[in-house]
Amino acid sequence: MTRENGLGLLLVLLLPVVGASRPGTVVRLNKEVLSYAAEAGRAPLQRALQVTVPNFLDRSGEALQPTRIQILNVHLPHLHLKLIAGFGIRLSAAANFTLKIFHVPEPLHLMLPMELLVDAPVDQCSIGTPVVSISDCFSFFDEAIVLDDRNRAAPALLVPLQKHIQAVLQSKLCLRVSNVVQSLNVHLGTLIGLSRVGPESQVRYSMINAPTITRDYISLDVNAILFLLGRPIMLPEVNTSFVLPHHVGTRGAMVTVGLSQDLFDSALLLLQKAGVLNMDITGQLKSDDNILNTSVLGQLIPEVARQFPEPMALVLKVRLGAMPTVTLHTNNATLQLQPFVEVLAPASNSAFQSLFSLNVVVNLSLQLFVSGVRLRGTTSVLGNVQITMASSNVGFIDMEKVQILMDTVFERPLLDHLNALLGLGIALPHVVNLHYISPEIFVYEGYVVVSSALLYQR
Image 1: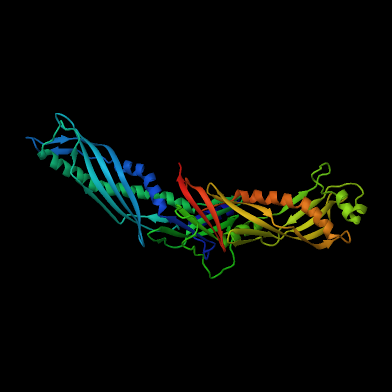
Image 2 (image 1 turned 90 degrees about the vertical axis):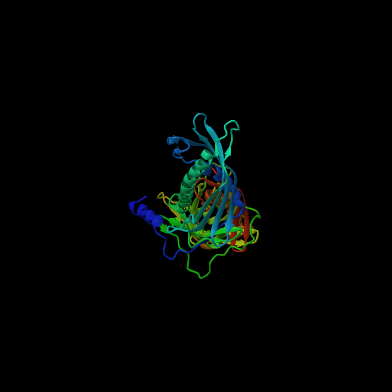
């Protein structure tokens, strides 16, 4: 990669692309994801709440006696996350602190129950990622329970001891919760990283406005920008925006991702501009499976037999000048390619001469699937490959005979090449270590929906 292209990629990471509010993508985190998030976050939160408690000064004796306190364990038997419409998330948790009091003559073991309530608004930060903050944090304590019946502490010790522990925890716990949230924000920041599409192309996702929050989901309007050699692929401006309907995809899915027509158009435009859809199909003389040679073609076109009495391998030069088009109808996705195909034969000066050229139209069925975090595709030909003569240097050509040859030597190499490209796929919106699990694809009029569970793996 050149220095200029490297600088361009750095700039697109740091700055929004002016006017690039397309193509539209919507990521809808449904309320079903909250149970998984609560379970995944239980252990980190328990570790965060295990704070250090300074010594307690025991005043029950004649002299002040410092008493060491250690939190042995923090257990969260209850952790619940709830969506608050127009705001964000409310966390409620029940925690049990198991403490060891190094009291003389025998240590004392206590369990201190606590209720934690946290309100966390969800917004958009300046770099285009979701950000979570804390607006309110409250902790409520019940009376401490002595776990060792044989070592009953006097109320004169237990009451001030509990007040000391509660005061420490109230001063530290919300800060620890805030630290956990900041770690989450660092993780959410990986949403905007560049994801590789091809050798010289990438896709970058970023939020274009504040999230929409209801009791049922958090919806993120996401801008997907594709880059080729550090330059954004821009579609013609339109005044419409992509809106994902409410009841689409799988009911009860953790995440629903809506992919607009624009995203597919942009991806195909990228492939076309990169030239990766172009291909050369080369004949082989000593192959029963490859009949792309002058001997076979000479049986269909007399002038070819006259010019090439000896068998010679041919080349089909396939070039895509027109942009491919994808059409999305309910339960049906199709792709149309209009390549220009030139039939070449070796010339005496080691170059190639053009025998004839064809305008070709190929209609394909497009099947989509998700693997890992990438949307991939595979195609199959619908009907016959349509061909018309563009030019000929070998006189009259019977197109019906050429049609048979094209069906034999053109269709399979084209599908193999195209499916290899579509099999590489394009990364869906995601953060590091978060994977789509058991995804389902739904094709609607003008957009595609991915419904999926999520799995976090380090």
